[in-house]
Amino acid sequence: MAEICRPRQEKRTAREKQVAQEKAVIQEAAAALPEPPKPTSGRRSQSRKVLESIQEISKKMLQASSDIEEADVFGEMEDALDSLIFRWNTCLQNNPELCLSGLEGIRRIGEQGMEFIKNFEQSIREANAG
Image 1: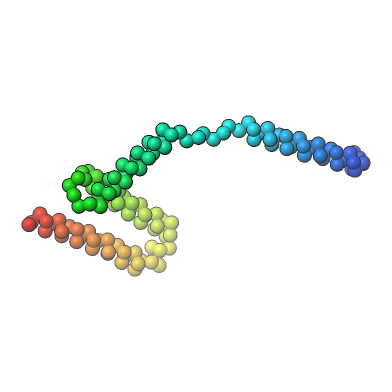
Image 2: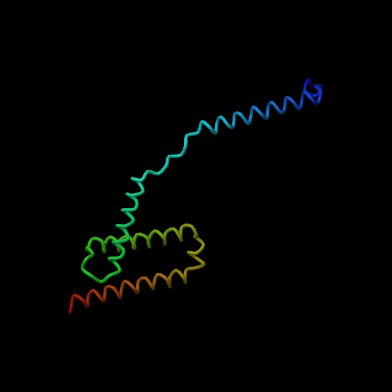
């Protein structure tokens, strides 16, 4: 009741003081926040070296030469398989209705993948036989 009965000028002054105090508190809080860490050149150069190594390995994989190590090829193939399995599982888990409505499409895509594997196995057999 006392607030209602105060003259307008006093109310305005009180509000202005309150707004000024709130602004001061906000500014103090912002000033107290630590600055985000700046990236160090060591991290950047290390990241750059890793990226360059990855790019070099990728370039070697695109070339038909014996410079690339067997373990690198197997690692790439294993990663591709893991990625395929993960992506299929994710798609089907996130869209369970496709298991029923899109069964023919899923079957067609799966058959394409199995056909690729069969052709791959056949080419290995032929390479080992000849």
